[in-house]
Amino acid sequence: MNTPGYPSVRMRRMRRDAFTRNMMRESSLSAANLIWPVFVIEGERRTQSIASMPGVERMSVDLLIERAREAATLGVFGIALFPVIEGVKTPLAEEAYNADGLIARAVKALKAAVPNIAVITDVALDPYTSHGQDGLIDEHDPTRYVMNDETVAVLIKQALSHAAAGADFVAPSDMMDGRIGAIRGALDAAGFFQTKILAYSAKFASSFYGPFRDAVGSSTNLGKSTKETYQLDVANSDEAIRECALDVAEGADMLMVKPGMPYLDILARVKSEFKMPVAVYQVSGEYAMLRAAAANGWLDYDKCLMEALIAFRRAGASAILTYGAVDAARMLSRKN
Ligand code: PBG
Image 1 (cartoon, protein in one colour):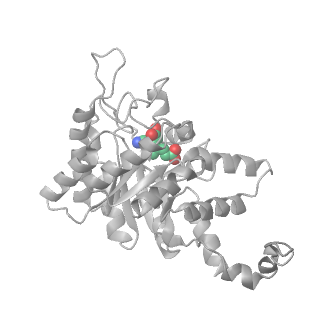
Image 2: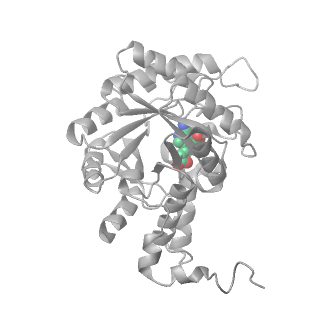
Image 3: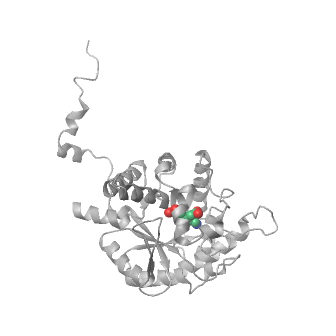
């Protein structure tokens, strides 16, 4: 009987040679898909290593410019700035919208020196709050609930200060309700209609953010508190889609799924439902796992990084935030 399949069908025929493998590869990765998240500190010619993120350094703006120049030369799409505030952190996070603050100065310097790389700023209050939450807390509430609308009012000021400094994208990572529409309205009213919004729409209450909180110095302040009253429950997928739908309606230019690798199902679903550019964040814990395994000789960092990045592309990501962005871009430039 002539049943379809083996031996007339042999899948391995097309895998035998590099030319057929290359021809039929469905996904591709380019530096144009990569966003490099960086930690910025005050000062000149200063770097600090981060124990839980080997290979990543906090750096002062002057050094950031030198490294951004290299990233731009390699074709990296964007840089995502995260501030490390060494001065006063306050309950109301006033420093978050200082027109002459660390991020505003970093954006101005970057746009002046390296205009061809996209500058993406983080809109959230956690680097600035004395309690380490992304928003303002209700001191009268025993749960110290993060207040939504009061927080959004501050996020608007923060986003406006970033736009005024010249940010290409503002990226709200705070998960307050209604912040995308509120920020879009305020940007438009101030004439910043070209400033794009990369919405952290599907951001989960993940434990994979641990090393990042060390890097920005919010983990001690946060203590045992969690972000579960605003970030998504890790068990939920439909709820993530609803968050995305709202952000699309409110004017988001791009959506984000975060973390990355354990959430590829969400990424694929968001891409297929909304058919718009989606970013994914390979977060600090994912990066730390790769580095730690590589340091032990258990995994090949270069190969596993590239495999994870192509997997994000396959699942539907247009942009990938990765601490390995420059490493990956170097590898891609050697290949061509
Ligand atoms: C906070 C923020 C976090 C990350 C980016 N922005 C951590 C958090 O929500 O606690 C995590 C990034 C990473 O782990 O690499 N606004």
